[in-house]
Amino acid sequence: MQIHLTIHYATHYPGLGHNSGLQRGNYEVDSMEYEIDPDKEAARVAKRACDKLIRDNVNKVTLRKIIYNETNDITDKVRELYIGRK
Image (cartoon, rainbow, N blue to C red; front, side, top):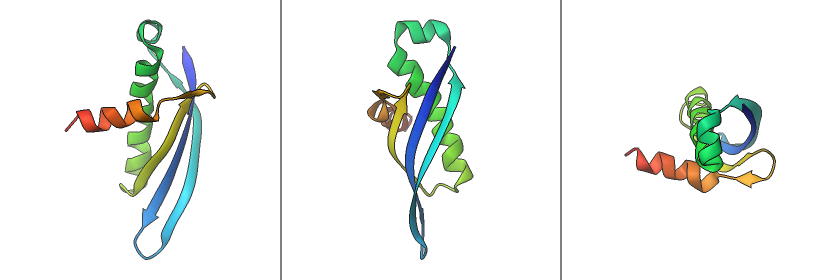
């Protein structure tokens, strides 16, 4: 099963300012986990996508908003995953 993710972010580079960005794509989710808790499974997949985005932009990324399937805002759930790993 797939979900559609939209990630709104900003990149910051010293001396050059910042730019707003948008990344969209379809991502595979675990169907069983998605049935149990769709937001949690979507947040897990979104965090992996955000990790790649952060790596690709040399850690100069601020996540602004993360939405899946056009209407479900999971920004806070993804942020909790980043805080929880410390």
